[in-house]
Image: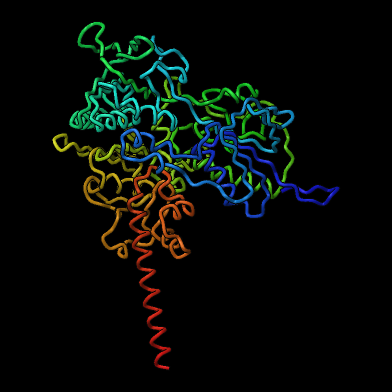
Length: 557
């Protein structure tokens, strides 16, 4: 908060956030939690008309495992933060430090944050065009809540479905559609699904699990053309390792899961440095303008990006701390002459799939490895959300891993049981892991990786033996340690939830508002609900017992 020397007033720093998705909403929440003195005047502009929702769970909505009403995220309600939904930004006037919207409104700023996210990438094939908002009937890309609703509606009349892209999102979608009883084929150009996270052996186990779940898997093939008749998709013509030239898969529903591209059009029009994303320094400020920041999928930080939501949440936390510090101790805003040093992201090919950009299963604050001066451990855990199928990969893993000196890898391949586990150890801790088909071991490996738990002298024990208590609904929650992590996405422990209940929380929503538990991948929801119910019951029982004892004492007197 700055001081007006003429009037003696404290003038709040104006922060405008463009984007009200998972990262923009998290930034607003982080700022609200830290700005106890009202040093900031925060305005959030979101193009979508909805309250913030968890995009990670859109594939669960398509699968029918999660209702739309259950994916909402906690909103900021501090009386100071202004959130304008359904408001699209058309221009940024950096000279005047103002943001212009499609409603004709003007929002001045002292600091501007771009949290514009990423758009679905469309394959360059005939029949699709280049505009994701003008696809033929029956063709959908899953990016928004409206997209999920449209895909669900299309499953009612479609005779069969084709999912293009076998990354994390494609795997989740294919399993979800097959689970609805729709004959589904997964088309992927590489030799196995999820080839960016899994090596050939793990990919083969995943493929077998998909086929066992009723998904036809076609690898080594790409869409050559989406066949459209009367404005509606009727099939996909394949290229590559086809059974015959011009092989065609009939489909009334085609879902595209071909990765994402950062939304940088506004930044480009504003004259900011843009490569694959908005180029920012270690402080997340644009290398062009120190008053403009970028976080989440649209940002290109020096350490690079894997496109996971945990990275965006970690950036939101760091930036909130920085902006609150700036408001408390104002400093001159000297314009940077020339670009700062930064690292270029690898390649300009297809980016990570949307689910890789969104999916995560960890706390973003875990100590550990640092990249470019930024704590990176705990922001690179990828998890497939597909009902009973469990696939988790983290750290140094997959076919792209090059062994380093002092590194040791052990693995268990059990294709008959649909299981593959690999653990990579260095310096006495777990530095990478892959787990297909064993959710309990996956949870243990995730805990060991994010917490840097010392590993056994023989790392082979990691493949089967639990190394951490599981954060599952316990038959006796009193036996769960207070420091046991229940929500890995947000680092929420049993103690945190107990403190909420002691303060009066009685529902999952109450706990989510206070701690953010259940707002990440959603896998901890059952555990949180179970703990809240148990803790509330125990608290009520204690109160009744104390009341009875007090009554007995009074009677005796």
